[in-house]
Length: 253
Image 1 (cartoon, rainbow, N blue to C red):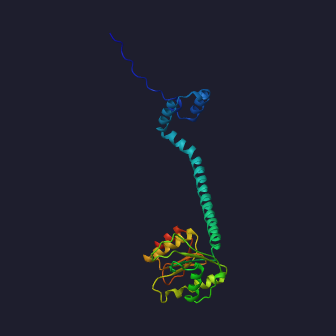
Image 2: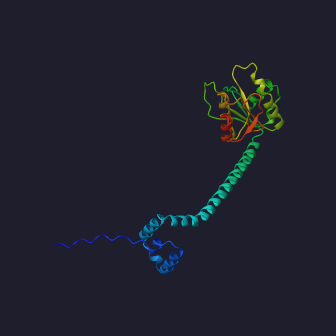
Image 3: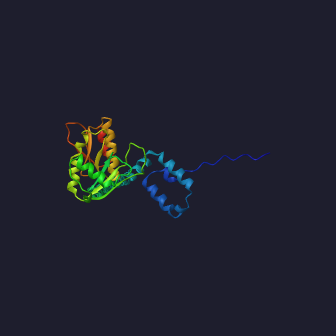
């Protein structure tokens, strides 16, 4: 005759959970301090789950942890505030660096659309002739520091390469930029003159022009290396220094 199966034993919840009084807890902890390192993790989890079923124990646990949670939340808020401050400082420093880089280009202009013919003497003469004859501003080759076309030359094309010109006199640069309105007169092909920009601001200006084309902005222009925009005809121009600011303004926010 086979032996009878013994019923499975149920885990016994320690006395601390059966009697939640503080005296019983202190006695239990004192009696078992030496053995705390030997507690089986599964037993600990079982005891913790059983304890949390007791509303009184749960309330005590919440009362113990609430101050700690409050302190941690305050530390997180302080870290967030410090991080925002650092981000603002980094952005300000980046803008200052951009301004310095742009200042180094204050004597440099870009000419787009000037005809490119084979056999012409030098690019400097092309620029001088155009500025003197069309803009009516005398310009000699000795006033030019550097002058060159950028990009690979392509024959039989209606898209001449851009010319980058660095002048010795900042006053002459400002005169040329101020005379750009003459470009609208009696020309079959558009010619553009702009101050040379660092890549970041060139991309910003390009995006601003796209917003003008889609009527999300009224006007955009460059002055002293800064990108200006107008949202409406009756509003003053404002400087934009980041793509996020430009997108926000264009979207109406």
